[in-house]
Each structure stands twice: as C-alpha cells, then as structure tokens.
Length: 444
Ligand SMILES: [Fe+2]
Image (cartoon, rainbow, N blue to C red; front, side):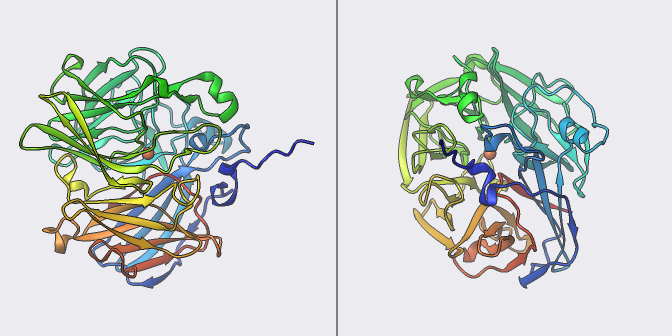
C-alpha cells in the first residue's frame, strides 16, 4: 500500500476555514494606540471546495481578514472570500463582471489601498475593488491594461502613482505600466525577456524600476506534480533589469546576479554617485514538489553601477527571511530600517519560525522579536505614528501571529522603536486565521 503524505498546504494552520463570520467582541491585552483608526486587512489562500490534487498553496481562493481598530480598542473582526467569478457562482451570487481574467484568478495575494480604493490582488489578474466591510464591488482594469497586473504594485508616495508590471506566457512576456490617481493607465511598455518566468515582485526608485528575471520558468508539465506551472531551472541564470521610469525597453540595462529567486525585494534607491541599491531576500533554490524552498536563504544588498555595468552583492544577514517591509513613505528612497520575518531557518515552510527581524542598515545590526514557542508570525507591516513622524521607525509594527497551542490567531502591535520589547497590544481573535500572504493597514 502506498502512503500518500497529507498536502502541507491543507494541513495544520495552512488548512482553510469553512465560513465567513463577523465578531464584534474582541479581547485585547494592552492598549491599542488611539492614533490607530482603521483596519488591518490581510489576505491569503482559503480554498472553498476540496481542491484538486496536487494542490498548490498559491492557487487557493482568496479570503480577506479584517480587524477594525477605533478609539483605543479592537472593535471587530470579519473574514470574507473575494467574489471571483468562481466564488460568486459557488455562493449563488451574481459575479461582479468586468474584463475576462488573463490568468487563474484566485485574488489571494495582496490587498493595498490606492487613491482611496482597496484593491485585492493576485498576480497576472485584474484587481477587485473591495469595500471596507470586505464586500467585492467590481473588477478594475484601468481601461487599457493589456494583461492584469502584479500583486505587488508600488504606490509612489511622492507622485500618487501606481507603478506595476505584468508577466505572461506568450510574448511579450513582461509589461511595465503606470496608473494615475484617476485609475487611468498612463504607460504600458513591453519589456524583452527571453522566456516566460514567474516574476512575483519588482522594485522602484525615484527614477528607475528594477525587473528580476530569475529562472522560475513556465512549464505546464510541472503542474502535474506540484499543481503550479513553474519549474526551477538554474541553467538559465538570473539577472536584474534597470529601466528609467520615463524610458523604454531600449533603455533597460541588465545586470547578471547569482542564480537565485527573490520573492519580495525590500526597497531600492539611488545613490549620489549614480548607483542603484536594492535589498533582497534571496533563495538559491526554489526546490520543487510541495515545499517552497530547499534553501535557508539570506538577506543581501545588491549595488548596481549603471556606468560600469557591474552588480556587487553584500550579505547583510545569512539567515533566511522573507516578507520584507519598510516605512513605505520612503519607498524608492534610502531606508535605514527594514523588517522581515525569519523564514526557512526552522523548517522548509515559511511559517516554521517564531521570530521577526528589524534591520538597521546604518549600524548593520539586527533586533529580534521572538513570540515564543508555538507562536508563528506572518508579515508585519509598519504603520507610522503621527506624533513621531520625524523618526523613520516612529510607529508600530502590526501583523498576525498564530497561536498553535490554542488553535487561534492574535493581531499583535509592537512599537517599532521598542521592537524587541513587549507588544503594545495583542488582540486575541477567538478563531484561527490560516497562514496567508500580505496585509496592510488601511486608515480611515
Ligand atoms: Fe508576495
């Protein structure tokens, strides 16, 4: 008899929850800062029906979890599936309509606010516009977007512009685009790369964008064994393309890097002497089958010399880490602090660890916050404190922490300037939130 191992993405706290709830009575330890009025929203895969095997985590139907903070209290939790066409039909609701989705539409990866609209995103698809109460309102296509967009658009804090890209299986394999505050696509530029690759994220400076052409290549055969149509193909090497935001495909300069994959670059910026710096969490092997990686990874600072054409890599931290965030009012300019979660150090899955990191790139030191045994953090996002706006780390770090022993989840708020200290507040949700991807604070 052949034993079939349980799918890791349908087990433990990766397993989906079966329902949508609204809870208004939440226990909180500590005090929610009065300045926090709004919602922490976090999304992730939560397959509604038993998925076809082999099921891959990246493909589960998106569910958004929202925790409302107001008047120094946590005033409510709710969770809702994003009404993709498939979910709307499964629930007997009318699909919201809009342009046909160019790729598999799970809407499970990220949730961001742009120009007062809350966008639920998954790569390669058109976003859904969500209400604060997590109702799915409509599909967004920006009018002329040729093919969906990344789940990781950058909202330029200085220009109120959404900067993004999309990749696809047919040439051109990559497009760069920008969207203005009115939701109008203002630029679409096809970028030449040699083969279709999974490009999860990118980076942006004030004047440049960076594309990561790394060898996680499109391969339909791979879907048969891992449920996801991409294969790690190190023979193709890796490179970073740097393009002026005002430029074209002809202006892209390519820099060879180590063969690796970088899911979420932390941030990029320009130096006074004409170099581009980007901090990247790096894995050198994406593995295959069901485990996301077989490599512990590291955090590196890459410096690209636009004149000399060279890329130099400097190891900032030899530990594996992911879900990089900064104070995003600095996006595209030099940051001193960066925040990550420890990943792949304690096991093959991203949420095996109990620790998050704060990096100080000036002193080259790291502060850890360890939540303790059986408490596993997801991505933590920086939220600025208006009373400390002069300090880059003047604010809070906010994220979900799974309490494995109690089979439920906390929303934890740390003071970013007292990162290793006790939390400012811990909102104890009475249920668990499955491990997911990205979250953001949406202030009222
Ligand atoms: Fe992501």
